[in-house]
Image 1 (cartoon, rainbow, N blue to C red):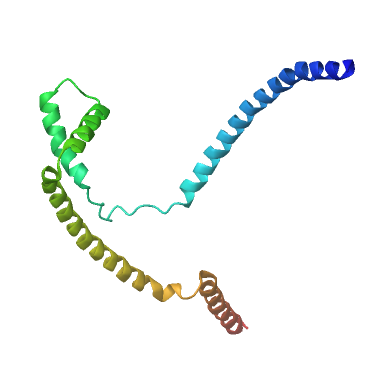
Image 2: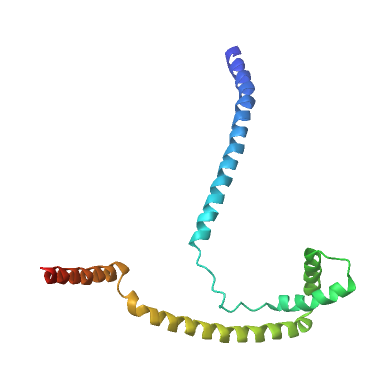
Length: 166
């Protein structure tokens, strides 16, 4: 029995000592993981397609239509408040307290903006498709095939020049 107690006490003493280095390792692992995430985010940024500046922007929701007007009112009433977060929080609280009837005009404006956006995006998509169709004539063949044909033509011309010289 004494041997059992002795082993138990030694393992209890060793356990905290063993955990301390592992705690340090966890910190190192977290640091290593953070470094990996930053490299992944850079890789993801390279994969993203560039945004087209001509593409129409999505319309504002009813809340943001409300917030546009609320900001002006809030700034007039509280000219000393400069923090955007304070204005946003106050706007959110006000929006939650509005009834459906009070929200209706903002929802109507948002619906109008959405209809306009849908018209603009359909026109934009048609324009993109027509531009893509014009570029498709050459894209049926890969660049290497086109380059091979160019090389063959230039090679034939060189052979003809060689024949002329003899």
